Amino acid sequence: MFFSYKDYFRKGEKIAIEHSVWAPNKLELHTHDFWEIAYIIKGSGYHYLDGDKHKVNTGDLFLLMPNSLHNFVPDKARVLEWINCMFFPDVIDPLLTSSTNAVDLFKALIFFDSFHYDVSNLSGIELLNSIEDLNKIFKEISIEYEQAKIGYQESLKCYLQILLIKIFRAYFIKDKKTNKNIRTTITDFVTAYLQNSSLGQNIQIDELAKQAFYSSQHFRKLFKAESGVSLSSFIREQRLNKACDLFVETDLTVMNIMEQTGFNDTKSFYTAFFKLKNMTPVQYRSKYQKKP
View (cartoon, rainbow, N blue to C red):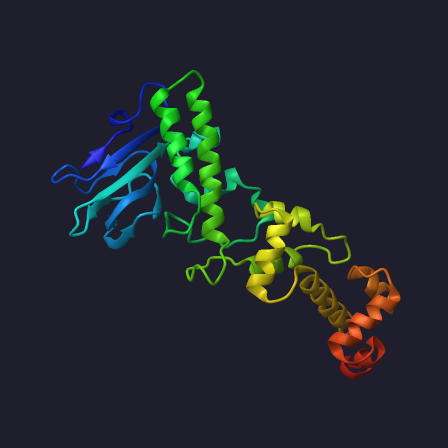
């Protein structure tokens, strides 16, 4: 079975919303020519998607690309309701007119060059009860669509952008203790950021948190809960490890190495280095540097 956008979208629309309730013989395996976010609001059952069978419960969400073959079926309770947010990606970016790739959508929404996620296998997205406060967003977006007041499509675009960012954020960044299907943890995110940054420069934690769509305070809290150390301590340790590499691999002076690793106070550098390595920088170089 194939559904065209003409079956759901009003004339001139790029975004459409539908509240679906399962009923016998109402829906079969089908494909469509638009993108879809399906959010389970009541009941439980199964989602058949491209030959696979997924258990679904209230709060689960699926981001589906065009031409995905799928269907929702309830379990024995025969109760299953979901909201469909259907859209074309060019509502986010006109350059995505014919895109069927979630990576393109991700890049258009987020400052991609500032992130270091592996998106090579990113296609459709399945989130199992992993995003908070989506009920409120879907309720508001449904009301906006039903009332269809002037400017409603532009308003829906804003809701859709927020919704997609929350989806991508939940997919890539999640606490280990609450989601075993981790793509990139907070620690991975910070590590990748530091590896692609100059440790000699001042690292703005507020900016780092902003890139991950968290407040600075909450970002620090999540990082410590996940890694067991404070974010400041972690960054300092990464700088010290880089300094160790420079002591072994180069003949740079202590002052030059301090400059390249972001330390501007000699006493604090020596104190931190000794605490981590139990020896002075000179002793470390003498012990580990290979002589020609």
